[in-house]
Image (cartoon, rainbow, N blue to C red; front, side):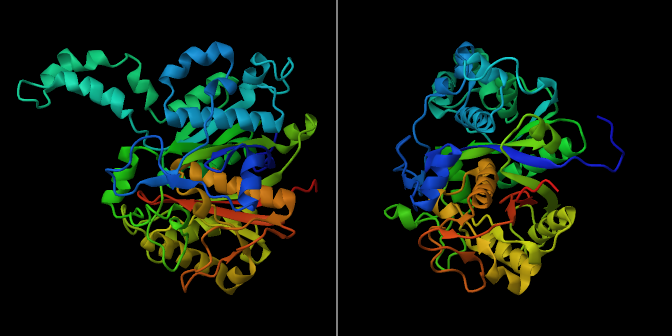
Length: 451
């Protein structure tokens, strides 16, 4: 298909795959969000008693074999927790979109020939800093000690490394999320990995949006996934003073986005992959269209690499860039999904950014925050938030936002406290930012109309 240099394809959302502490799959997640279910509890994956924060948002149990072809199960040994979450989300998204990918055909869940050209299907997936399996790693380290019990680099080279599988490193490279998703589903178009912590999903979706709009792909898996349910993933933010370490006995009230009494973030795991598709391609195959992506904006916090800008200038610039890309103003927005980590400084900066862009209008715009229910999902956070926005448009419903009953005095988000409310949502904005590093991004989505 030939286009002029300035002509862009419209890009729509045709599939949603999410894995959250309150549900696997977009419908279970959406139902749980509306029923005000909490996904934060005392960590059960390992004994957290020696850590300052002992609560988190863990995913429901799942069996990887239910989401991959039988022929791929031997590869499970090199799939870390983060990779597994991404693979599960890819299956859920492809199934929801009705895509006959190689995975679904091999599983006997879709008929051949495929309704997509694998050479025109890509992937942009956000990843975090994948934590190594401590039992696996310490087992090898224990064989590299000298006579005094100290770590010996020479013994590590002689014996320690031999106790790790030759493919060990492949479990922990950030690009392995996209690698396995593209192999399982035979996605051969441009593939990319974004590693910008909590901003990763928004940036990955934005990149996929641009890839399709400029004609380099017809379909893309995009979003992010991460597991922060790990001793190292808890220790790092604890040392930075970002964790809520005072609510171990009160997990349901621990994560308080923009709360007047917020005490820090709560770690979690999960994420989401969104199926973006060129409108002409979606219409040809008769796809169900959730919404349309009409704008993407990115920016950077140059205030500090480790601290949020009190004025939130990077977030504000990303919001303005996204609205400008969509050729919309703040007055046209019906719903916002801010990030809301629950930390004192980060939430203050984000509040300042939204107030700067929306002004008095913000108090009249519906808002949704998922952090109170599921915690901080790292690189997967943005995709989950975007999925909540898409479902709000799809169902004409604004779900409750847990633990938003007492907000910061400067916060003017219009959260729903009790039962979900009916509302015609035509246009929504979702934003996220990296808690360290400074990347910021925002996306504009709209109700789909053919004109």
